[in-house]
Length: 79
Image (cartoon, rainbow, N blue to C red; front, side):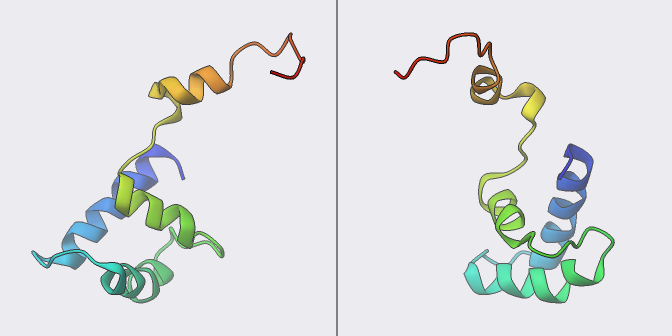
């Protein structure tokens, strides 16, 4: 998911919650009853969506861990 899609799904999630306390049952209900009928739905996206709902937006361009993992690969020796 790109950043724009993540933010759109979080907006849908906030509206869906309508002040309720998030839990696993609500996350599943959101996935099947809301996301599955939007243009954002893709088969197999549940883990990515649940990660978004639990951990928030992930922007690869601003993540230090992601940047470090994508660093130079000139040394292929085992650690």
